[in-house]
Length: 251
Length: 251
Image 1: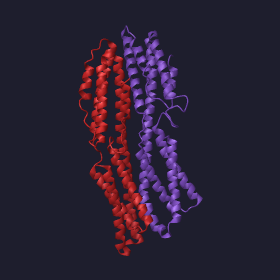
Image 2 (image 1 turned 90 degrees about the vertical axis):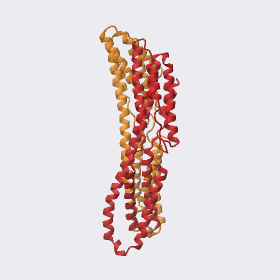
Image 3 (image 1 turned 120 degrees about the vertical axis):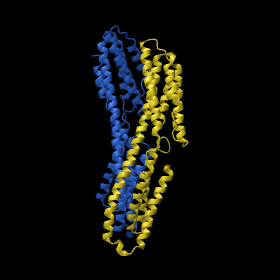
Image 4 (image 1 turned 120 degrees about the horizontal axis):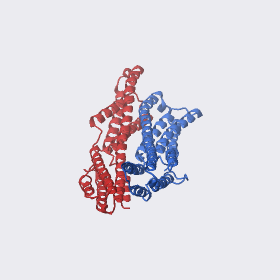
């Protein structure tokens, strides 16, 4: 399910809870809603609300942190690509073939990680043909002096780093938010909002305020899920760094 | 600690404390329950409640943090496995036995971690596959040229990383939740709910709200214990990255 669908479901559940609380208030006999009851419910729910707010905040922070890690992985990969191309340029015209292969594999990676049509899902699995081709193209270089040997060794190292990063990005693709956790947090939110509705007078200001509050908490769930899939949805890792690297290739 | 046993116990003790306090308030002389007394109790308990909410929130978040770390270790291990296999392919056909060994090591790891945890044994020790068989198979390669020498040293490096990661996963399997901490938190919760119950009017709304709040906090305890055993139970690290790696090995 997409982040928007789940966010909307959470909103519906939480706001539904608030409305249920308002309904319940009308149905319950007056002594049930005395100020004493109100105090009790406020105290108990205050505890749950503090806990939930803290957990939601921390979950967003950790989702943002893992998003940033992957983003910096992409940026590092781009930097290494540009640097590898420079190294090959220094090597000389013999490396022209390897540079052409590098260009092809970067174009291929760009096309599969950031497909031009939004409906197509991003494919993160490394290309099993282009990657080895680059390896072999570089291994085919036969350096004659010390300088060329050093440049070749560096290039081999870079290619292996880039390959490892590519596999790491592929393996990180799975979601880190488990459904049970999400369900538990949503149930807490619903319970809290039922208790809010229970002691609120049913006028439109209250309803609107509760609606905005439910939208906000559903928004935080949406953010967590959105950040959790960095190569899809609305919040995405930009392809800018890779494109800049691609522009630099061959210069 | 089994979350399915501990969490209901926590709920039972918190809710029992609430009901007991409600009973007690009927038995206490009226002047003990004056508005002043109520205010005094509320201030004291407000402090404890905020503290308990903070601690529960932070414990859930930190349990989630450890869970995420172990998850990322599994993904890193999977990415290294795929990359090692690519390196061995690049080396040449002589690496077929080593690749076979790698494949068996991955299959063995998947059974030893996930099947064992499923059966409730906790995760099994790494065995000899990563630390003896695989490095030996790689050491037996006799490189003929520079390229093969590079590939061999790369493969040896990755295989030693893999052995270390596998041991790390095994060592981390122990629970990080201490029993005394849990007991202290549960006692606080029981005290808080008891003090709330002391001033609660005995109507179904108040009792219902207190029950929901007690359910929510025991839900938090459940989450903490569940996240603490990442390879078993309801919330578990998926074996998907490893299975993906295994699929790639077949190619």
